Each structure stands twice: as C-alpha cells, then as structure tokens.
Image 1: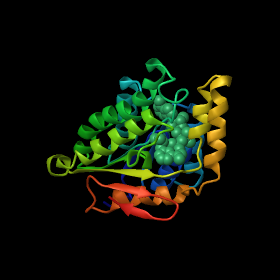
Image 2: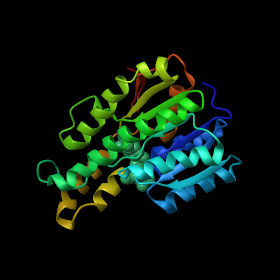
Image 3: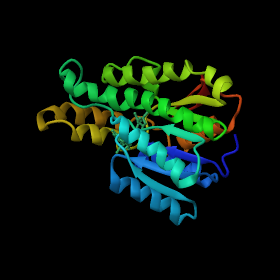
Image 4: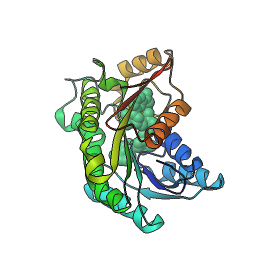
Length: 254
Ligand SMILES: NC(=O)c1ccc[n+]([C@@H]2O[C@H](COP(=O)([O-])OP(=O)(O)OC[C@H]3O[C@@H](n4cnc5c(N)ncnc54)[C@H](O)[C@@H]3O)[C@@H](O)[C@H]2O)c1
C-alpha cells in the first residue's frame, strides 16, 4: 500500500520504537496521530514531526483503558477524516522482579498493556480502517515471542500472544481489505528497561540493574532498522500474517 496521503496512528509513540515508526510514516507522506500515555513525550514527538513539515496530532491514551483506545482511534477519524495504518506498539517490559516473585496484580499489567491493549485496539480499529477502504495493522511483538525468555516469562507470553494473534488474522485481508503483520525486534536502545526499573522498589531494582548492564553490551538493533521494517510491512501487499524478525545482523520475514 502506498503510504503517501494515508492516515496512520502509532501508540506508544512518545519514545523509542513508536517515535521512530511514526516519524518514518510521516516522512513517507502519511498524516499521523501520535498516541502515548505520556503526554509530554507524545507532544514532543508530534512537534518534531510538525517541525519537519508533516502533519501530526497528539492524543493521550492509556491502552489498558478501552475507552481511551476508542477515543484515540476516533481522533484519527475526526482530525484527518479516516484511518488506514495502525501500529499497536505501546508496551512495557516488567512490572516487578522476575516471575514468580511478582504477585499477579503487578505482573498482569504487562499482559494488560502488551496483549490486551493490542487485542482491543485491533478490534476497534478494524471497522474504521474498513470504512476508509482498507489498510494495514502492524503490531509490535518481539524476538521474545520466538524463543524462551527466562528473565521475562510474562513479557515473553504477552509477545507470543501478539505474534500468534497476528498470524491468526490473515482472513481479514479477504473480509475487510486489512493486512495484519508484526515486528519482532531483538534488543533496541529505548526506554523500555528504564521504565521497568521505575516500576520496582529499590531492593527489587538491584538485580534488574545488573541485568540491564549486561544486556547493554550486546549488539543492538537500530531504531532506523525497526522503522524500515514497519514501512516494508505496510507497503508490501504480499505480506499478511507475517512476523519481521529484526536482529543486529539480519532481517528475516517469518
Ligand atoms: N527495546 C527493546 O529492546 C524492544 C525489543 C523488542 C520489542 N520491543 C517492544 O517495542 C515496543 C516499544 O518499546 P520501546 O523499546 O520503544 O520502549 P519505550 O519505553 O522507549 O517506549 C514505550 C512507549 O510506550 C508508552 N506506554 C507505556 N505504557 C503505555 C500504556 N499503558 N498506554 C500507552 N502508552 C504506553 C510509554 O510511555 C513509551 O513512550 C514495546 O511494545 C516493546 O515491548 C522493545
């Protein structure tokens, strides 16, 4: 699908992968809705896009709140008169120490943001995209969806859910002219781990900080490579139900 002139919405676009994705979509000619729970960060992304000469509007939405999701999608319709591309990207890594040392009321937040938020946003986006003549939904899964992730089992479960949800929606192309694909990036430098650290007490944070130090030395995927993968998943009409696995060394369509 040609991106020029389309309307795109990215959640979790105040930072990291979401910001890179929405900037790339805007640079490719889309009118964009920047969404995030963090108002300051989201407004900053929208301003960066506007100062680069593209059209962008910010809407605050917490993807754990279904009414926020509905409102975020409605803003695309009311601001730019349609919706063609949705990138469900908002996500968190951990809400406490490693499973099972975090109680369910804390670790279920990871499922609420990463999986429930994606399911609900996809559900509510479909009729709007259909009404605009069709389009593409991109989900942010993770390489943690593809292999065991002992440090973050709940995160891995949430992302495996996103991956197989994506693979199970191929019928939407025929029914609604909507292709659904996902990205599975390996390590990317963003705020994911510092955000997770902020959700922990001082005592809980100590082992996590050591883990952060260890992974910071591993090769990282660039934000540009992730944004490029999003553009490919939107543009290439042959891609439906696919997972784009992006590592520091390669990009593979699964
Ligand atoms: N950083 C990595 O190594 C990596 C690797 C693979 C996948 N991912 C995934 O990429 C996505 C983006 O993460 P990132 O690495 O750019 O991290 P990030 O922390 O820089 O960005 C995440 C954004 O999501 C927003 N957010 C968090 N909770 C939200 C909520 N309830 N509602 C709306 N917005 C919310 C945050 O405010 C933030 O702006 C996540 O889904 C993450 O799981 C990250």
